[in-house]
Length: 120
Image 1 (cartoon, rainbow, N blue to C red):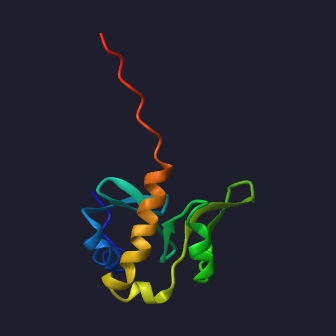
Image 2 (image 1 turned 180 degrees about the vertical axis):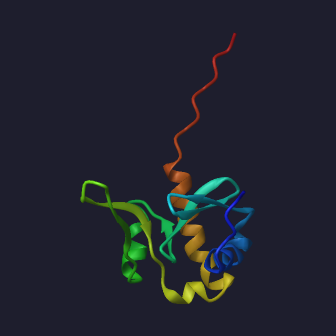
């Protein structure tokens, strides 16, 4: 049986709706977001983080964002390239759209190219 979506996750889905077809998947105690099958955001501990890369991380940093950090079983702190966004972006789909597009662009850039299929 699938876990019911928390209210915050449902709200994020509504914010992302103008970007495309949104799908959410429970993962590692949190939630992962896909837009048109591109993985671009996570919710962990009631905090939304959007995908970034070397090209876009500065935008998140300038807006006061923080990267997603977690502690491993052996006590090390790891950082992933997912960042928080300004609180205003959580208020409406219009405010979220530029951040969502930034995350989707980073996710697309991070995709590995498909291997060519062998021809017979």
